[in-house]
Length: 269
Image (cartoon, rainbow, N blue to C red; front, top):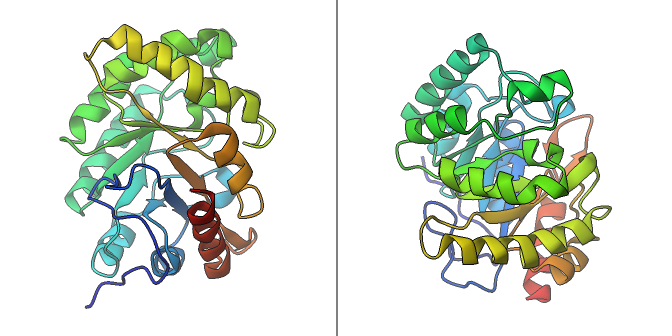
């Protein structure tokens, strides 16, 4: 079957979604079914985040859904590894399930993975921390495929960002999907996102001194064509994430919204 190529002007993407044009932000579309992924790819998305169950904020997709899409679209597909939406703390049983799911999705051709695990202290109402050991184990199971730290980062208070960012680098994540702290939208947290991109990451760059890879910030959370230019203008983030839904009740991506998101980013840069 011929693979679908984007219709709209888009970035030149490699397998992990990086671009030869550093000034053009990556547009990632969260898709909760195969139909949405096909629509998004055709409308100009640079990358798909494949998951299911919009109401839960996304859960691990079925491996067969990925297999079908790999034969139909050519842009990279990152898949979510999230067994439930109760929290970002996972029991031993949950963690074993996450490893099995990652193996199955890797075998079906996943280009990257999206997940985030916090420590058990989080469940006990203590300050959330990155579970370095478990996250690192999943990154290693990805076998070189890029991994995005999921919006568990939004539960980390800004006062603990420096430690969290260093932990994320230690784990080997290549990017962080975030709307900012406190679970607000990207617009509501734009000042925090600005500081994250322009202050905290630059400080981390200095501390790394060439040892370790600086994670890419992906801005998500209520991102739409009507606000993406403002968000880019304030943050200059290298990537943006949107569900681009026509109607949230049907979990279907709007081709017009994806095209408008792409056009807005092209105009902004």
